[in-house]
Length: 83
Image 1: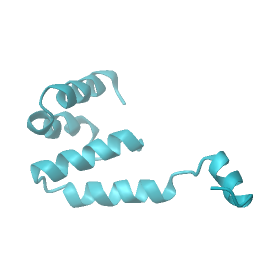
Image 2: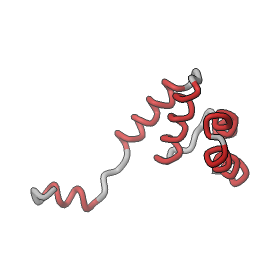
Image 3: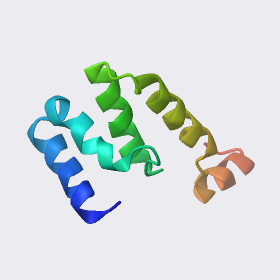
């Protein structure tokens, strides 16, 4: 994330998320940062504000979640039959 845009996103989240989040996300569109925390916040913002990109944000978060790598410890514990 670019520093000024990231700072604006953090301020929006801390001060008035619902009132400022859409504007704070604009510098990141259309090629948004594929990081879990960011995608979760983006989906929440668009859903809570009724933004037209809410469905797209949810799809992209779900796509990220499906493609997200599984931690090695989880793979090893599953392979050993321990969860």
